[in-house]
Image (tube, rainbow, N blue to C red; front, side, top):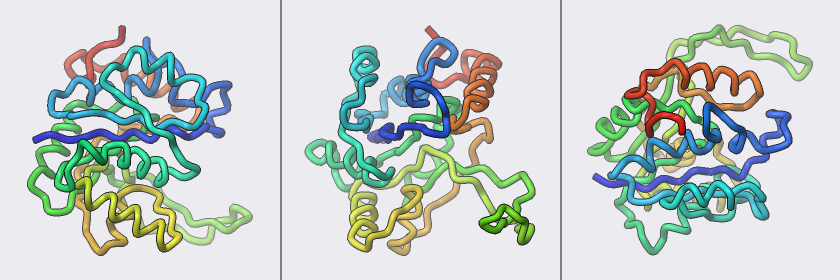
Length: 238
């Protein structure tokens, strides 16, 4: 099989609280985004990678020089707009039946085993799906004043992770349909769900964290440092 990668990286990461967006933060010898890209750029099944960056991003050019297999596209105000822009940049290269993986630029700890499991489980699936982890914490629904209204039953609840994997044509259709209806999906799976499809959940490691705060960056560094070289997708730090 072969697949394309689209990586939305146009966010400014305001919750991260640093001078540079979180995807460019240094992490264990690389940047966060380099770790996020590594498993795909090292995979011969990946036909190409598109990194979707903000207009006027001053950091991308320096990083791009180290990533010869990745091209860039201009992002939008919402994640779904950035992903659609990345898909559009592949219009003359990808077929409607090609697989596309969408992975967060701020998820640097994807394990090789999880990527392999996703590809194996979905390569013959009619819809596609996503990595996910079962909700482990007690969940509370709160009011606008942050007062607890109820404790939510977590059985059957999963945390959506990335990569998310869908056919090129169907994902384009899903995002275009959402845009036409003025709906903003929070991930690609939701857009596909709105078409009436049922994406498959593939269980992934809870260590596939998204770097949102400075504390997350410390956790990611510890996770990468603790892994044997063979379990770090894309190789060891340079």
